[in-house]
Length: 520
Image 1 (cartoon, rainbow, N blue to C red):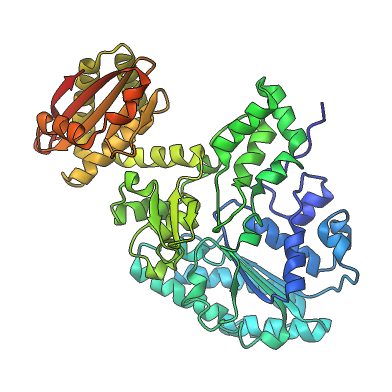
Image 2: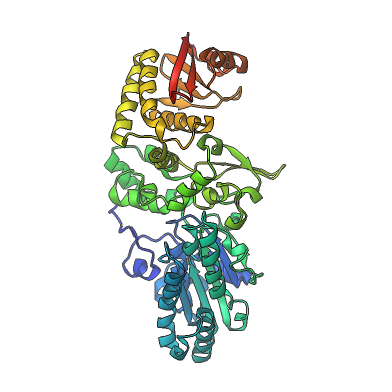
């Protein structure tokens, strides 16, 4: 059995990883491709904690001529000259939750070290864009080489206010002004690399930079960040073998477990299968499967957006969309879909080239469960412990074939949570049911769709299948009638199991289920 390697948990600096002999999956071939292709202005969008900053750091090291760091890598085999360029590297990730004054102070903080280095401190009282331009020109003159500009997480100052039109506009003007010299500085620039989560870059912020090449949805760059399935099965095979040994599973079963939990990201029409690198590395380092990416924090803007657009989670799964529906700038958003995709909560599950249509869905189990848990806080109370207690009691009743008791528990539970709803809409109630049965799905198999239609809930047990339909201010009889008319039972008739229809009615006045009928 191979020895455990050093895993770069939380390390985003290429130099530190290489000098510290940490595991590094070689992504330098993508920079080689940029150079061979003559790309000068490149933009990459990827979700948070997906390796964008590490890739930016690698570019930084290359253009500083750090030949020693690239030994044994694709770039080390390609490059012969190792010319040292001045590199300006602006990390905007810390500029969150700021007003315009704080953002101006942060830009000052970023510029001052370069002004000291290149002797332009006399400009420190001028506007940030002027200071930026003067630094680039001074660096070029002093080093005799064109400047490399790296802006990492360019949109970080904007994301947390994306739902606030006034604050967003003010911060956007500040950033637009700061970046405005880039186009005019072209004679002094060797290479420009921008990263972010969203596509603000394609509109107002970099509106004058019309030669910006957005590689985010190109097949050949689908695995530029993250860990591809091929990389996991080859370069990381020893690490998976160690994890399998620790978990007392076969290697094949461990691969299957990792795939279900962390795989599933697709960033283009014919994308490679990409694993979440943050979660995968954490799992290998800790020798434990966990929800690491989601537990690292759900951005406030995601929850705010879901609330703003009244997102029904059931509607997101398996949604068909054209690229203009989900890969657009936040300035043009009319739904939460673009940010859910760009932030990694939804991904491309299928592409139909005949009609140029994409199907979106959760990438994996970590994201699916994480999304549900994040929304539970907005819809389901009492506290999580009480939620868990209810779910366990409900599951026990269902397994004991006591649907009457299960629905009695559901009625009492919903009476306790429904007052949290902002209004008494059917959509709110559907969301509650979706969340509740998604939690239950951790214990028993819960389905929602079939080729014959979409029942609200299908619970599958070894000897029985429950098909449940919910009505809002209707009747249990109407719910049963819909099950029959839509043929919701048909997909399960060949299984030889007992089929049970459950019609349920929710009363907006009493804010809980008030009537149900069980047949079968």
